[in-house]
Amino acid sequence: MVIGQAEQRTGERSAAPLAVSTDGLSKRFGDRTVVDNVALAIPAGAVCGFVGPNGAGKTTTIRMLLGLVRPTSGSGTILGGRLSEPASYLNKVGALIESPAFYPQLSGRENLKVLARLGRLPLAAVDPVLERSGLLARAGDRYRSYSLGMKQRLGIAAAMLAGPELLILDEPTNGLDPAGIVEMRSLIRSFAGDGITVLVSSHLISEIEQICDHVVMIRAGRLVHQGPVDALRATQQAEYLIAPEHDADRDRLARLLQEAGCTVLPGEGAGVLLVQEGGLGAADVNRLATQYGITLRQLGERTRSLERAFFALTGSKSADVPDDQELGAIR
Amino acid sequence: MTWAAFTSEWTKLRRPTLFFSTFLGLALAASLFVILVFSQATTHGGIVTLHQLAQPNGLVIGVARAAMLLGVVAFGIAASQVASEYSLGTLRQLLVRQPRRAVLLAGKMLGVITFLVLALCFAAVVALIVAVVAAHSRGVSTSAWFTGTGLGDLFRELGDLALAVVGYSVLGMALGQFVRSAVFAVIIGFAWLIAVENIVVRIVPSTQSWLPGQSILAVASGGGEGVSYGHGLVLGAVYLIAAIAAATLVFLRSDITA
Image (cartoon, rainbow over all chains, first blue to last red; front, side):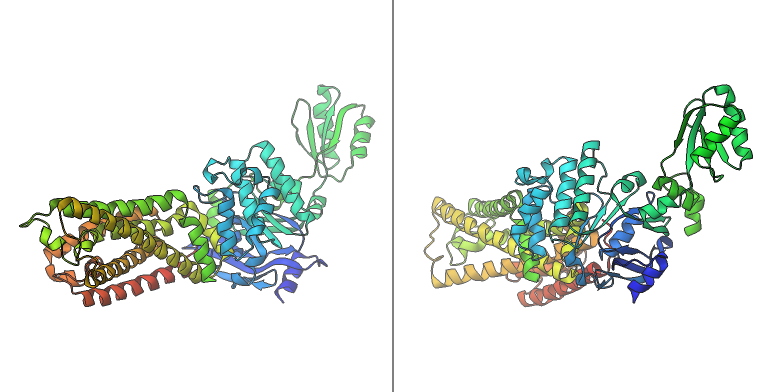
């Protein structure tokens, strides 16, 4: 029942069943609403990015999905179990919530044994997940001696311990160096190959864009958008970065494009213009310039990014914490 | 399920730093009290007389004197075991693997209690060996210690001490659950048990019969001047049941944001 409703809300009926669906999920701490009426619909098998600025309510939402925080209102279904009964589905869920948290004086292997014993999982499952996360060689070392990247990988190993059908990773690349981020990205992609549904949150939209095929956008506790990444990109109008051969032609070119219905903004670099909207294709722009005797030294379509889509959907220019006015609106 | 939580807790408890520091720390504390008792004993008075030490219960006099210290140490370890799950952030990992919070709490409590009772047993064995050595060095006869009466006194006293350690541990874990900070839990607990209760009793002596620490101490010492053994046992049990109920309720209802 709930799954069907959630599918309707996404505006697109997917053949895949939903791994996660929520209805009217809200959380208030005192008089502050942190999550407001969120209806998630995450298809099974998707690598779903959960995107929003810092303070948007991502971690609180994730904690509600994991039974750590009690929703103020709303309901949901996760892997067929009811959100109000976390024990009915958490045996099929692995999670890394915010920064990895382990016992500093225990080794990586002993830390995983603590969780394996608690979850009544076979201890034989520990070494394979350590190997997959690239930690087997250091598994006997104390956790406190691990680098940040190793700690993060141990967190992933812990999340994989139960052989999950759903993996929830909250800001898994936080604090990692570029090499660590690349490693983490490839690790997450490998989970998708195993048929695991992955929900990965990040405040870095560009990061999500590289690994996810589905996206949920949240801002100030409210759901902004959810659906396939490609579909969202396709909704973005084309933008072009153009530059005339001679800088003296820049203003004339801008005026011609404006008269043709385009919005023209200064681009990055000397003489470069950013052309938005107007319904003109690259060939049209080139033809218009040539017609008025202007030769272009640069004409390229700007990549349609999730970041731009997010800003367009929220009407915001910043991916970070909402300003006071916006926060005030939700208080 | 509680067994799984219990064995999981023991995986943490047996880490060398905690295991050895607890077992050796309690053994050292108990042994120091034994040495103190034997070194201070005289033929005519002091803390205890040499004649008293030669009685069947002489073997456990020193260990019994350490009850308060052993209890306070147990309290601190128990409190920090619970509170550190919040400060380290490990509680969220545990609750993903065991979402039934009452089961998790029960397994943790059983794990910590058995750990501390075993540490007490080890400390008692070491202290008793020290007592035998100290007795020989002071010329105290130990023949009465190993009679039926002496061994009966020994096991009864150890049983009372174990009950007291259980009491202190439960109070410590409950406080750790409320405060969620190992440091604050230990400071508050120590201040209450060592200072506050004693000050209150000095100001209003009649309160001695109703304070939790005094009740448990009465059990540990087999009953005292202010609180009888039976009264301490019943009142202590009431406090422990209330502490477990309150800690469980708080744990079941709280949002885990750490």
